[in-house]
Image 1 (cartoon, rainbow, N blue to C red):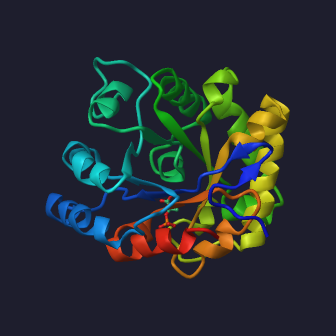
Image 2 (tube, rainbow, N blue to C red):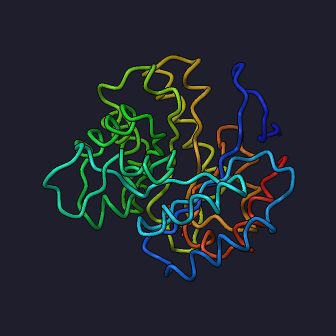
Length: 265
Ligand code: PEP
């Protein structure tokens, strides 16, 4: 079994990324309480990169508190335009302004609930890369697609369409999150082996698109009901470089414990 934290793959050092996606959860009071307690719960000499993506309303206020604990800040989405008449949207420069370094793009909830299509996701990817926000591109199949034997085809298509027109140089910091839709918020996670198989497949696709060096360097996360009792199983996989965590990132003690359990796997 390979060592995940700070280990090498194809000559590149891998640093595990543990990312929390709060979605539309937490009042200001709850978010501040999390930020106040989480530094004391995280491992003192952790090697993983830790990221929180809170609701937009909390980005600015959380930034210094999280930064003091070495936690990075990310947006849950971004719009492709610079500014203007786009009611309800948020721009890349606004996210950067609050101290974000990452942004989630193409989350399955946005695809399924808000009807986002691959073409729109591609425009958002271009904007994030152009503005040097690190995109966490989410891809994954539904249960029906998996049962029909179409999981790989769907994931390959989502990947190719989201990355269309992006150069190797723009891929430098790209993070991918394999999130099978049937595992998100359901408590039913993919097995470590199934997640590994798909992440390996995604890396093979990246190899065809951008070559083996870049494919080895791009971090691929698993997301879908990650918890304290399964984080190790995912991080032990050769092609899984971290986790995108929804429900279990809302509780500071649980989230910090996941980070702790993921150290030096
Ligand atoms: C997510 O929101 O990306 C996610 C994986 O959620 P959960 O961990 O709750 O399944």
